[in-house]
Image 1 (spheres, helix red, strand yellow):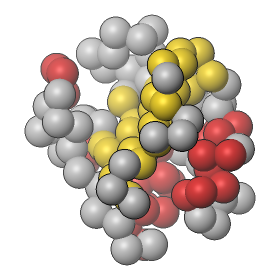
Image 2: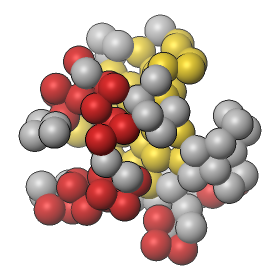
Image 3: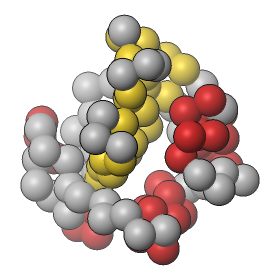
Length: 101
């Protein structure tokens, strides 16, 4: 189980170890403030109301969850991005399906 976000960047397959609800709770209980997505069709819709969420840390790292509803990536997905890894999208099991450096 992920106990810090740096390990998640190195081992994204661990995304599949938790549900989006569990990730949301993980972030809240570890001092982060999950925010609604800021772009697209789910912009500013709170997670609790069916929107996705994002968490920023270390000024340039981002975790995002986008639900299947209104997704243009064939279903729900997670997105991890950093200056080193670029932007990567993963299915709900932690399998990479889109990479942009």
